[in-house]
Image (cartoon, rainbow, N blue to C red):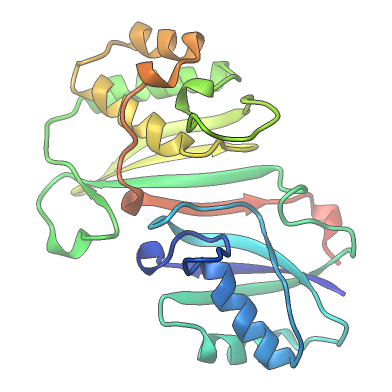
Length: 247
């Protein structure tokens, strides 16, 4: 039977979600724990990759198990055995052909910027103290929803069949000394959110105007966009699926 699991992790100590031959990913830690609990080799499939240092409050993965799972018991045992910076949050029975990556209809990220020096934000937010025009940044963010090709914000060496993404919303919100960028789309390219944020910071510092921002998108050239901001401010916060996959 197939189950979807929701997991949260602090990405500081990991080389992203994906299992790798020469580095530790979160996926590897989960597979090791599940294999011990279920007494056989377990492989899991995530909804997508996250880069080294990126966090998640709601990553989703699926795995198949032959035995009937007691969800509460599995969550309890796994959380006892997983590292302190990884936590299983939820498990749900799904149809046997449901796929955590290919069936996802929406993914959401947040990027956290702390606007004052804050020792508690280290590794969990980007500390950026320069003055920003948030109104202008939000006006530029709205433009993301009217375009589809975002090659300009993708890592250059990436193997994808298309650079098209449907962005449903993108906006900034000030929360005390933290500035949070919210973005939702059907899919994201590698490095896309961090490049968007870096470019919007240029807009906020008046290095670019809104028309410049749109021109960058239209020209589809990564060299014209801003730098990728650090990974430690990025959080995967939601992955959504059609209701009919759940049992």
